[in-house]
Length: 127
Image 1: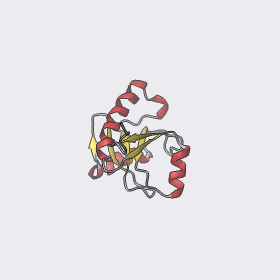
Image 2 (image 1 turned 135 degrees about the vertical axis):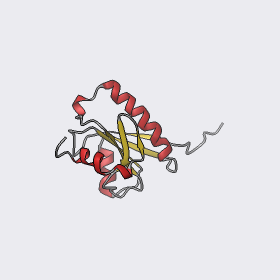
Image 3 (image 1 turned 180 degrees about the vertical axis):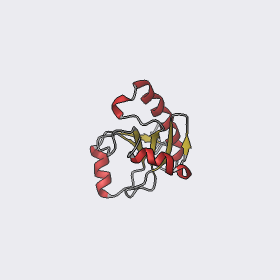
Image 4 (image 1 turned 90 degrees about the vertical axis):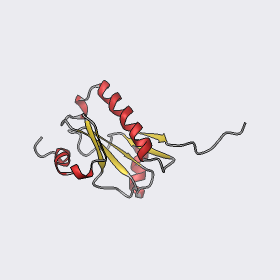
């Protein structure tokens, strides 16, 4: 779509793609906001959040989470962030990031719906 920054990223950021499927690409975000790793799932089709079907969301979420578990393997946890503060709601995308970020970014993460995902066991219960 014309004048959509994310559609432009689809065309102009091909060399930065980390993973690609038939439905979406994954690439680093333009603004890292202090994170060591911050990536975005971006649909290939220009589709607003309100038009995404539930079955698509489930499918993309499962695949993206599985990918992120490997991508963030050096971190004990990572976050998949909701779209509460999304700046471009007319093109579906999802952000995943580590827990390193600017103080403002970390505070915003806490106010945003997010899913914290463990990549490894960080402690063993006593038996």
